[in-house]
Length: 363
Image 1 (cartoon, rainbow, N blue to C red):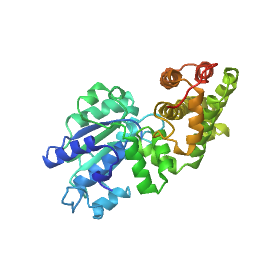
Image 2 (cartoon, rainbow, N blue to C red):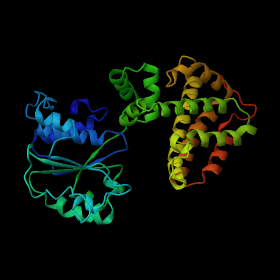
Image 3 (tube, rainbow, N blue to C red):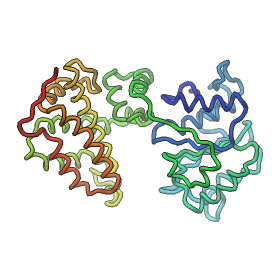
Image 4 (cartoon, rainbow, N blue to C red):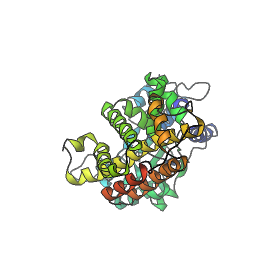
């Protein structure tokens, strides 16, 4: 793999290539973007590009020299990845403390062993606690010339302003559905319909889409959610409370269903999974709206469910379909603000089911 193969981040890659070509690479980058957008992957490919002994004519890493292969295998002595210890990235992970392994930044004063630069990649910079973040500031402010910092975070507000001011920001944005789907077809040999469905579920995050291909239990969960969406489209209002309970159950991660998580962790994880479950419902209603607007041959995500979607379109007025999609996004925000999940899903279901006497007709 090389920078050319990073999926759906052309603007970010162009920024990095320009810096390399001009020999003006800042010593501290802040990669901003959602989970699964490719920030850590890009950081590693960037390190390979800088460290490669035989770069291609296009300026990419060769993927075959000793530096490229060692970085790809996670065995390069000059590539230091710092992941959080639990919820936080702690100071003992950066600077040595009694009773802990050597800190990642203890070798900061020493020249790299095998590459032109030593890379410190913070995989979740938003997890730096106050102590570790403040201890990092001096290193970011006056790094040795052979050091390259790359901090990855989901948003600007997730890191301290003092850290932000010492880094050059590179934004990572959601990849286009077609881009992610094409990558899944080419790299995972998935059928086009399944690839488009997973790409839609991943919401522009290629990393998430590829993880889904390796987790059949999550694909089964997605199918269960689509089955539920179809039942919503064919149920009367009186069934709303039962459907809301079913949504909460289906949305739970497999571990939570088996009782393998603590009560507090189950509640926290379940809230996040419930929000992602709403994303699946959005894709169902978006497909239904597309058929309502464009007819039975409309381009949709869930091509294997076209017959169900055509019938669902006949059950709704277009105005309600548009309202449903908007409402699902709104309720996702409510959940992020810690709204009561039971009340929120029950109110939502009362609005999602077809209104009494409503019928829609595809053109």
